[in-house]
Image 1 (cartoon, rainbow, N blue to C red):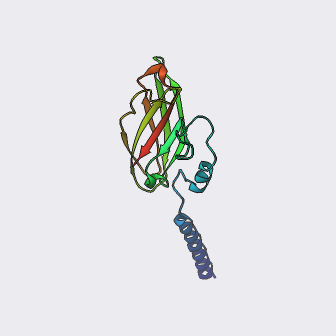
Image 2: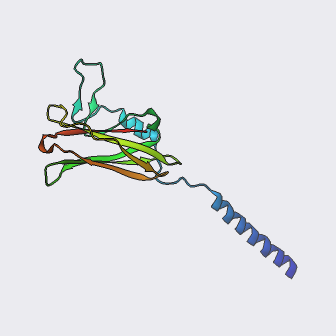
Image 3: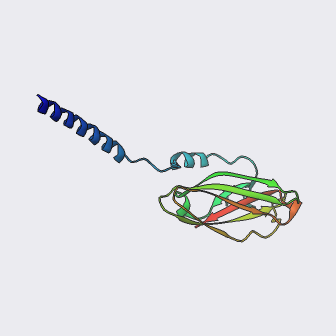
Length: 162
């Protein structure tokens, strides 16, 4: 009887251990988890706010201002723009920032620069130099820069490439 109980106890313990190991083998997605289907659906909505329009209507799509334009097709399903914003410093410069998420399982090399525009959408100053960042897998990263022309800046456009 003791041997039967001992075997039963051993079998029960082995079953619990096996279930525990199986639970450990379940793969969890690393965070943040990116949903490109929802992201791309949101991008299909017409832009609101200020946009750059072409001289000849219909020749180029309207480009939203005060946002990010990803110029490398290879990045479109690798990174997401989480947020953008701008504000004036005490000296009158415009400081812009954009927060991105690397949605891949590997590090990415990203470059960004900014165009600053006047109220009439003329260049307020030359575009900034490309700023390079290496971003780890599933990491959030922020790009920031400042204008140099002070109160002339009314809007901006951040470009991102690989």
